[in-house]
Amino acid sequence: MDETGFHDLDEDDQRTEFRILCDGNVPALEIRFGPGVSDGPATTSPLVFASTGQVQLEFPTFMGRAWDLDGCELAWEDGTIEIDDDSTVTIIAPIDGWESTLDVDMWTLVENQTAKSTIQRSGEDVQNTVAMLPMAAVRKLGIERGDDTRVKPTFDCQSGRIVVVLTPTDTTRSEDSTGRSVLFAGPSNDQPRISAAEIAVSLGVTDILERGESVPMRWVTQDGDLIGFVTSDAHAGV
Image (cartoon, rainbow, N blue to C red; front, side, top):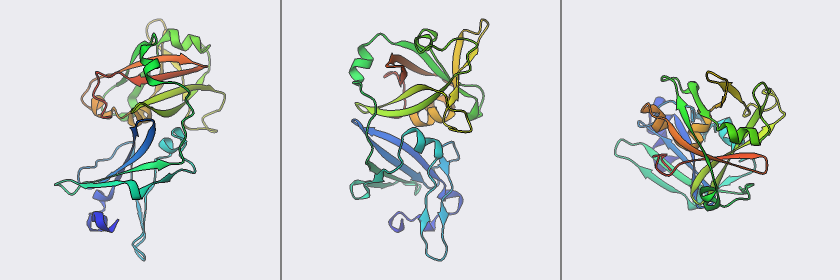
């Protein structure tokens, strides 16, 4: 951390923002800190040990679980460091030991008949972010109105693009906090949705939501999962 000037920053500027990027089918971790980083769902405060100067970065729990990063390592020797004019530091390092669990080709997803929906935010509170799910695709998973169903989001890299995979799960919130309840809204209760604040962060679309815009998504079902990705005409920052 010495070469980044981390220890010279004020405590507020030591806030650390995390993000997963995709290089082909392989993820990399982006870490940012400095004056250009503000509080958000993927921002944590590091632990700095005064006696040794050692810095312990607190990785967002949701992101680690949803990307299944337990046991993975960062290839620091292959990483890059950039320092902006305002002293904001960006570090990008490949993630070693991560393996994709999604047996699908991105181009096949794009060419398949996909259903459309959006991610939206009501007001400025990031917790009011929801992902609308296509009714027809949800029904293919056997989910109907009145069901008490939760889905577990995981993420994958496909051809340089992040995809989210929603898998129905029997686990409760106390057993797995990453799971999301499928709720039905609208005049006829025919619009399935899930809470999506952390999902939006992982997809890299918070900048769109902060502008008051919705994020266009496309979805396809495969092997009992619902697979979604941001459409190519959206600025997702990926």
